[in-house]
Image (cartoon, rainbow, N blue to C red; front, side, top):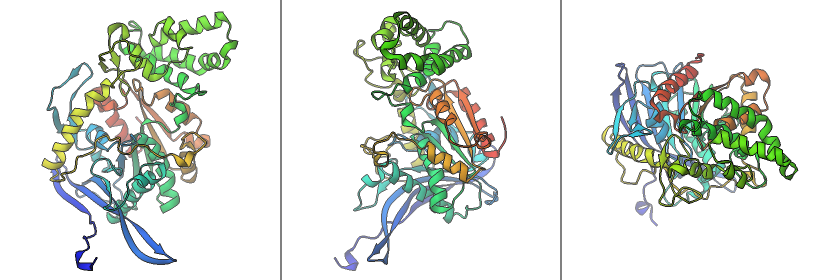
Length: 478
């Protein structure tokens, strides 16, 4: 192929627009794709840079701010396979989705409003969509699979952060990561990767609906740990749906946590050594906490798998509850099925966020792209965890290493009581086992909300969470 007939190399495709916050402050939005390139070295000779991926980002910078003192927050969601739309239009960005809430959902086409509590008031924001999500894709002629796994994902998102920081002169700015769900595992890994690969030290990491150790949430054979760690979440969901009468939520959670911490692990560890009286007492206690029948608890051998719980707890009402948010309810065509066909909480949020994002990018940020914006895609599956072959997936060691190397690194953990995907008690368990000295552990803060995985769809939680995140970035105590 002649030089004249070769296709042009991909270039950054970024669009800049100007906007104003409700407070009157002006800001600049920059959205589009950034090209990632890799060094080509053959027989020890450097032969240039080869495009490998085009990553979609949306950045917001406050006009007139001093960049050296102005914080910048890099944000992403999880999945794997999720774009950054949830944090972007749910709680952090200058515009937010209006969709209603559990029991009072709005009809299509939903709404989009100014976010008067946006973190942009305290920090510039950069939202990143990993490869194959949003509008991010592998470069022409390149395969996407290398990015569909723990290491490739970490390195590509880290490269976007390095590039944006460098090109915008922000190496001396306070820097934060905000990740949700699998994005918390990514954020913890990035804290270590950015330090060790680029010498980029962070000021803080925000872990929203955290999972850093898959052993705490995977119901695999021989692993009894999740049964105890999910119990307080089951209790919270049962309470929300009236199965604990008029008892305060704090009371029933305290009871569930105490049982999950001491008696429940002992009961599960005893196995067939439990006496009939001990087993009967355990069945009654677990049933009372979870709202399930004693017959069901006994039948599943005291072990409540989460998808089965979401399908079983309101079965007498012919309703299922949400995995992402147990406050939401739905119905399946087969009221006798063991596991629901769809998560009613995901059903509730997918439409509003998809509509808002597709409208917002094109009509307000002036970014045009005829590709489908992949809000949440299965195209990244199977996700590779080859780095953990023979062991469970965990980044606890990486976060601990980052904190020991950078003693000023603070950690914020946001938990929803009704989150059945990443339960709050599992996050507590994981962080309490972080191998760092006590003085570094003191830099970890927990905040709790009476909502689910995307706790910001609950308006009172959104307002509190916005204040909590702002205070964390500013280094204040709330």
